[in-house]
Amino acid sequence: MHATYQINADELNFDFFQSVKDTFKGKEIEISIMDFDETEYLLRSPKNKEILLQRIKDVEEGKNLIEVPIEEFEKVL
Image (cartoon, rainbow, N blue to C red):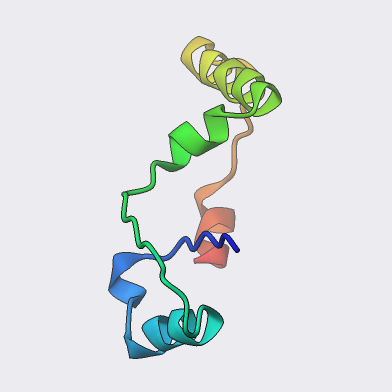
């Protein structure tokens, strides 16, 4: 069996490790830790990469931008 967990290091606690123990009870396991780069993950998909790079270009060129009044932004905070 293979399982991948994505979790913020600050959220690691006893319950998380207990869950892993319960899932793989009695089996040898290997734990590998790496930090996760969201940008790298999003760029793995060719379609996502195309969209993200186009949006970066749009921002750099000031095209296809949406202006939101600060009052509207403050409402969601």
